[in-house]
Amino acid sequence: MSFDESSVLEVVEKVTKSVVNINTVRLLHDFYYQVVPIQGMGSGVIIDPKGFIVTNNHVIEGAEKIDATLASDEVLHGKLVGTCVSDDIAVIKVDGKDLPSAELGNSDELKVGQTVFAIGNPFGLAGGPTVTKGVISAVKRSIRSERGLIEDLVQTDASINPGNSGGPLVDVHGRVVAISTAIVPFAQGIGFAIPVNSAKRCATEIMTHGQTLRPWLGVSGLSITREVASYYNLPVDKGVLIAEVMPSSPAEEAEIRRGDIIIGFGDKATNSIEDMVKEIQKRKIGEKARVLLLRGDEKWMADVTLGRTP
Image 1 (cartoon, rainbow, N blue to C red):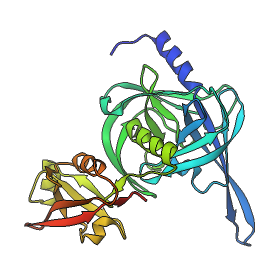
Image 2 (image 1 turned 90 degrees about the horizontal axis):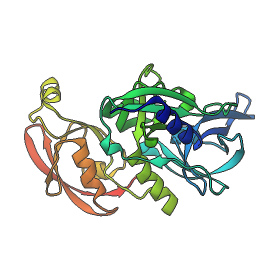
Image 3 (image 1 turned 180 degrees about the horizontal axis):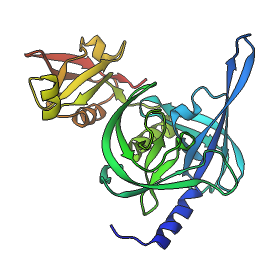
């Protein structure tokens, strides 16, 4: 893909106007049980001129007060609208109109090697947001953080500092393709971001209903390939190896266990995590579905009733 520097600079300048600094205050108790305010910060991106801002859930988690500093240095009080913990996405609302909002792209079209820019506003300093350049290193990554397993991430070598969490990852056309996240302490030189399609899905549900209303099975797992099957000595080279079953989840109630292999959902074959997620998202909360599993060398069917994503 060819592009000239002047056009990229124009695009970046336009996008940075929609990037904000998120400043939070949490109230904690010290050794003497006194309340101590703890400040935190991160970044966010305006996705609607009416004042809706997307950031990371871990940026605003537990916050008693949220302020957003715009690129114009104006500080607006923010109110939490809702969160999507499984995707580490949160939506806050500030009082404003005709705010500069970013154009959202399509993360399904991302290609390994394409140029991207990570934009953040970690300190709300004069001079506006920071910009770093890199490429898409990989897609569909899964990482385990202190907050659990996060799946289907975009990996980039564009520098993402902790204060840039919640800021946009944009392509050369200025479209937001992912939301940066910096919650993996060992990821020096490696950045991870939530695909914008996941962020859009979460944000739309939150802005419409105040919460996410997606169906939930309650498992995390690994897509099986020939290499994975060989390493773990598995009987199949396609499917989803269950790594974790969430307590009190529909999967646990259906007696699905860690180590089981999902090879079918409903009437469709399950070759990967993506297949499983797509089939779950086609359904409604409370809908029943049959899951075809392998436990050892034996096949069996589990009847599950999908719950709401907590």
